[in-house]
Length: 355
View 1 (cartoon, rainbow, N blue to C red):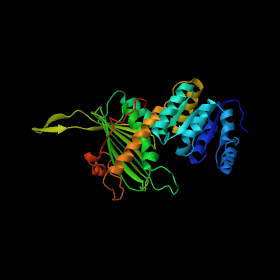
View 2: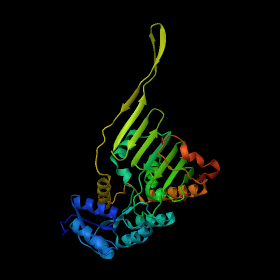
View 3: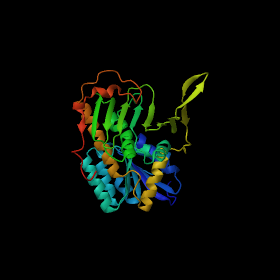
View 4: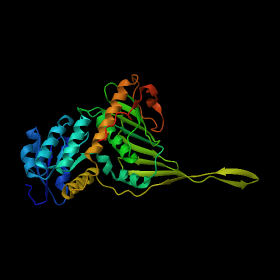
């Protein structure tokens, strides 16, 4: 059984994602997976047995550990987080943070007042390719950012539509890259919530386009950032980054004629590979131990939920989208043009100061 004297942690909710949290905690050095809790006692027992831990009630677990991962359904996040805060237990809450942004703001304020670490599980922030991208861009303001998060049907009930389940990952990366929220959003999607595409305009001039699908027969996770002098391509899956540039054009004299000459350059920076979840949980444990602000704050989580909700609202207002989902060039306007300017949601007047 666990009890090695490391930093005591637990997991509340051990479905497919929660089990991965338990696995990583069990692997981390100087961390002790004290227990797991789940409404399904058989499931909890199986996970506890697999990772040499114990089944505990949520109340007992929170009285025993210093930090937990919360991987229950989104509708239960707020209640579990409040209980964590009452116990003074640091919490990492899987995305989406909460169903209601106002509740999220209340939780963020309560965590700050109590001095309890509250992190949101936007895992792509810890993808080595994304951290490399942040380093490459520095203070450069992108011209455009596009992302595709596509895959086949899962064969199980997820609960959230593709905007809250998939696109929200790229929404978080988009907001973190730009350091500002969009001024307006237009979107369209299928009525069953299995495919959506959204366009964003930002006060700083950047435009964005995100697409999410559960109808694509190949798993794709990629991001493209266009700047004035380069195109940066990120593959989330193989954790690779490619930088495309065009060298300065030149003219040369040959056989009495003047020829235009240019060449394209592709760079592949070294990316420190590693499992994003391991990096995420390691950062969470460090924040809980030191009291430093987490890499992804509750406020970040609220902003992502607000923006995703705005995408959902814009898609409802847009003309019906009946065509089959397809994988086009993410730099093409494509289906997003179906949402007219009249359907775009202006977000400038609906922002709360606390988010």
